[in-house]
Length: 61
Image (cartoon, rainbow, N blue to C red):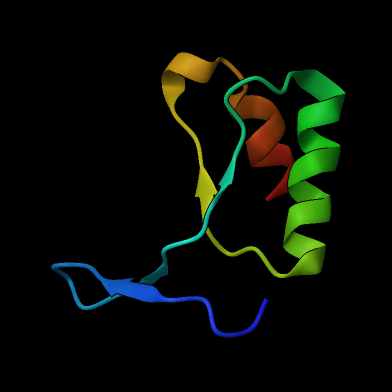
Protein backbone atom coordinates (compact mmCIF):
# COMPACT_ATOMS: atom_id res chain seq x y z
CA UNK A 1 0.00 0.00 0.00
CA UNK A 2 2.34 2.65 -1.26
CA UNK A 3 1.58 6.33 -1.68
CA UNK A 4 -1.31 6.40 0.78
CA UNK A 5 -1.89 9.96 2.04
CA UNK A 6 -1.57 10.60 5.77
CA UNK A 7 -3.31 13.07 8.06
CA UNK A 8 -1.39 14.58 10.97
CA UNK A 9 -3.44 14.47 14.16
CA UNK A 10 -3.36 17.22 16.80
CA UNK A 11 -0.84 15.20 18.82
CA UNK A 12 1.54 14.99 15.86
CA UNK A 13 0.83 11.33 15.06
CA UNK A 14 0.44 10.56 11.35
CA UNK A 15 -2.59 8.42 10.49
CA UNK A 16 -3.17 6.78 7.10
CA UNK A 17 -6.23 8.30 5.45
CA UNK A 18 -7.19 4.93 3.99
CA UNK A 19 -8.61 2.66 6.67
CA UNK A 20 -10.10 -0.82 6.88
CA UNK A 21 -13.69 -0.68 8.11
CA UNK A 22 -15.22 -3.47 10.19
CA UNK A 23 -18.80 -2.20 10.60
CA UNK A 24 -20.64 -5.29 9.28
CA UNK A 25 -18.10 -8.02 10.05
CA UNK A 26 -18.77 -10.34 13.00
CA UNK A 27 -16.87 -12.86 15.12
CA UNK A 28 -14.24 -15.08 13.54
CA UNK A 29 -14.72 -13.43 10.15
CA UNK A 30 -13.89 -10.07 11.71
CA UNK A 31 -10.74 -11.37 13.37
CA UNK A 32 -9.56 -13.03 10.14
CA UNK A 33 -10.38 -9.94 8.06
CA UNK A 34 -8.41 -7.65 10.39
CA UNK A 35 -5.44 -10.03 10.36
CA UNK A 36 -5.55 -10.13 6.55
CA UNK A 37 -5.81 -6.34 6.36
CA UNK A 38 -2.74 -5.94 8.58
CA UNK A 39 -0.85 -8.52 6.51
CA UNK A 40 -1.41 -6.56 3.30
CA UNK A 41 -0.39 -3.26 4.88
CA UNK A 42 -3.36 -1.56 6.51
CA UNK A 43 -2.43 0.40 9.63
CA UNK A 44 -5.74 2.23 10.20
CA UNK A 45 -8.59 0.03 11.43
CA UNK A 46 -11.88 1.95 11.46
CA UNK A 47 -13.94 0.59 14.33
CA UNK A 48 -16.47 1.74 16.92
CA UNK A 49 -18.13 0.37 20.04
CA UNK A 50 -21.47 0.45 18.20
CA UNK A 51 -20.19 -2.23 15.78
CA UNK A 52 -20.19 -4.79 18.65
CA UNK A 53 -17.07 -6.55 17.36
CA UNK A 54 -14.42 -5.03 19.63
CA UNK A 55 -13.33 -8.39 20.98
CA UNK A 56 -12.61 -9.82 17.52
CA UNK A 57 -10.74 -6.67 16.44
CA UNK A 58 -8.77 -6.67 19.70
CA UNK A 59 -7.84 -10.33 19.35
CA UNK A 60 -6.54 -9.71 15.84
CA UNK A 61 -4.51 -6.72 16.94
